Image 1: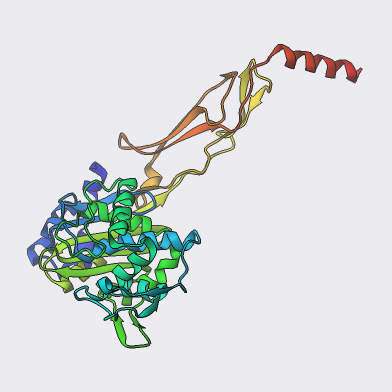
Image 2: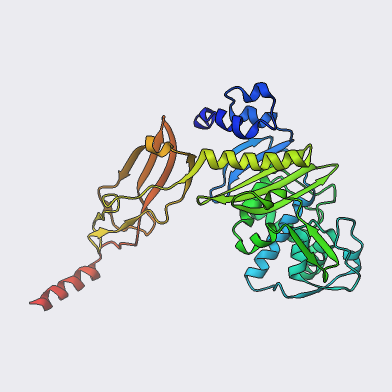
Amino acid sequence: MEIRKKLTIMFICLTVLCGLLPDRVCAETVPVEDLLASMPADEIIAVECSTGKVLMEKNSDITAEVSHLAKLMLVLLTAEKIENGELSLDDVVTASANANSQPAPQIWLDKNEKITVDELLKSITVSNANDGAVALAEHIFGTSESAVAEMNRKAELLDMRSTTYADVCGIDEHTLSDAADTAVLASELVKHEMLIPYFTSWLEYVRDGKAELVNLNRPVRSYKGITGMKACSTSAAGECAVVTAQRSGMDIAVVIIGGDKRENVDDMSKKLLDMCFESYSLYSPEPTAEMLKKIPVNGGEQKKVAVTFGELPDAVIPKGSSSGFEMKFEKEEQLTAPVRKGQVCGRLTCMMGGQEMYSAELVAAKDVKKISFAFNLKQLLINLLKF
């Protein structure tokens, strides 16, 4: 926290935030927390999706209506069904009377009209079609109620503790979430690359051209590295947006709930993304040969055991700070059999200013059994045969 507080961003304020903040604020060196407080929105959060690291936030745990952002959960469940082979984009859906009866926004589906999953997915991702969401939910889960149950089950699995779905569209006043949970959902969605063309499309046509879809998430038109995701507005939720982008291996998600104007939300989204990409980077240390040197095993069937860090996880750090890291590495000089695969036998820690910035565990790469009478006898016979 101290390091993040020290990341004052006068240069960012001067170059990208002057359109949102008073001149007297832009003329000073302002902590990130103060900049966020000045932004006209109830909730704000920015996270790095692969690590879940929260980079910036303001009131991100206030449970509130989130409007059509709730449809992102339906999109996630749809993507999972497609990728595991249970659903195809070419599947044909028959619109029900229930889908036909949904309020605007819609693509004006007629009762019993045939439409593909691909078109329905476009109607939800590019636009916020309520009839498209209900038609897709009913096709996949049988009923809207069953779809809602699955949406809530998935939210629980993702530990989205402030989220409750009462409908598939997000228009029910009892469908609630917060910015932090929505960022968790966005982080899960960016894992599905098949969705990027849907989320980043600016203009689409469905129903043989009878319905035009225009993306309300306007950063998709020009923001470098944009990968999605959704914008919407209601009187209860205010102006809302989830915007995701990828640069230099980092996936950043910005969630804004309760904004005052669409133009401000668009500007805030892009500028918060800029701040994250300019201020942070991913870090993963390179293990040395000495770190990975085998460890002797006392009383084992093998005299030494190989060690590994496995796949070293990435960590989000202030950009350029790794050069100031103090590296600490501890490793067992000897292990006693039996040794279990995955047994912790060392630790790498990166410190900066007394604060731990990164850590990874060194583990045994395989099992080593304790020497037994049978093993000793076998070795004796092998040695006798050599003579």
